[in-house]
Structure formats: structure tokens, C-alpha cells
Length: 155
Image (tube, rainbow, N blue to C red; front, side, top):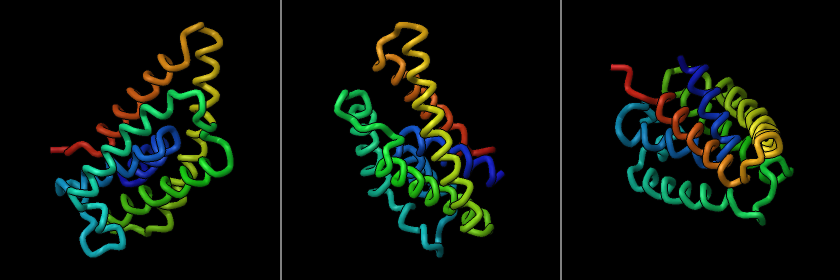
């Protein structure tokens, strides 16, 4: 189970960089992800969860602006890979598994999703004629659906 969570949270971090941390922090602050006693315990702070959610809203808006750099430019891509590594490692550590394995899975998923998401978005705009912001909103919906489903309580 940790593998699919690390991959899905890493992937959505590749699409919207703060999305993975938002979902991990929210799950940890609500007791659905046990990060106590780990280097990732700070993610369980309810204040941090709220701050990350506010920052994510800003990212969702900023993503639609024409001045926003490509997610695959070196610096944004590096950031997404780093965030993917953190969320992947946190998920693995919460399950008693090796952080390094989760970090590799999360960062790889973030990089792949960044390139795939950017290309898919451009292709949909080109083939459908829909405005880019409309297609980007569909991407936001995918991020939210994957994020909520990846950390839902299995009970």
C-alpha cells in the first residue's frame, strides 16, 4: 500500500507542487498517517496543514497565469522532485519502511508526472480548442481526486 501512496502523492506533486505535502500534512494532522517520532513529524502540525492548504490555493490560481514558468524548467522540476521525495519518504516511514525507497518513488513519480502532465495539457488544448485555463482546471480536479483517494481512511 505504501508504494501506491508514494507514487500517487509524488505524481500529484509533479502536477501541483504543494498538493502532496497538503494531503500528507492533512492526513498526519488528523491521525490518518503516523509520523510521530520521525523526521517528518512536523508535517502533522494542524497549523502547517492549514498554511499549506492556503499556499496550495495560491498555486492553483498562479498555475493559470501566463507568466508562470514551465513545471519542467530546471528549478521548478527540481522543487517538484524534492517535494515528491519528501511525501514519498513520509508515507514510507509512516508504514515502518525505508525513507530512501519512498523518496526515490515519490521523486521519480513527480518528475514523470510533471513532463506527462505538461505534455498532456498542451495536447488537449491543441486538439480540443479549449482554453488552457479550462484544461488546467481539469488537471486540478485530477490532483484533488487522487490526493483525497490516496489517503482516505480505509475503514
